[in-house]
Amino acid sequence: MKTSHILFVITVAITLMGMVATNVLLKEQYRKIDWSDAYQSFEKKPLPPARHLIVRSAPTAEIVIEKSSATQALLLPSMAQSYKTRQQGDTLFIDFTMNYDSSPRDPHNDINDELPAGLVLRLPELQSLRAIDTRVTLRNFAPDRLNVSLQNTRLRTHNLTVGGPVSLTASQNSFVVLGDDRYKALQLTIQDSSGAQLNNTQTDAFTPIVSPKSEVQLRGKALHWLTLKK
Image (tube, rainbow, N blue to C red):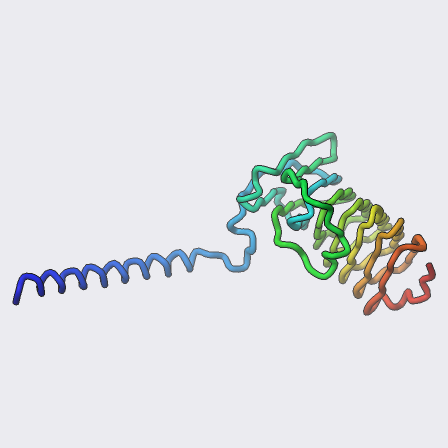
């Protein structure tokens, strides 16, 4: 056999061995991936425990606030440098503005879907939230009471169970999308041209305070309160 043929066979053999080794490594890495955790590639940072949050961010990424036994912040690596916190007593201030200087983005344009997550805050409990210029999702909490204040913000909720009063105020063109939640009593204050949408939201008592410019939509089980008048 010619030397060139031998070298060709050796080259092919080495290439095939490399491909097999690469395939084995890829399969091993694939098995290590936890496909149930959508945030496994996020950077993990410690988060001081707090029951009250004040959040200011840019309207370019979703902030997800969810109940968890562990207190933790998860950050999209490309946005991690924009994350700042400070604590005062039982209140945690979150700044996630990312030097946003583009034209204002209307919260009403982001009603139907969450934006790609940039920050996830995991907390054992939450009693109040104030959000400014933010796109935020709140889910899986079951507090005794809840106070939420929004300014130029879109809020989406999912699976909240509140055994006591819920006070929710939307102002400065904010929009609230309440999901399949269960409340003891809901006071919904919609100011200026802000709006709200209740999707299968259940509450034993409902006190709406809405401005003439506001938009309030009732869907599913929330149609029980169709007597709402502006």
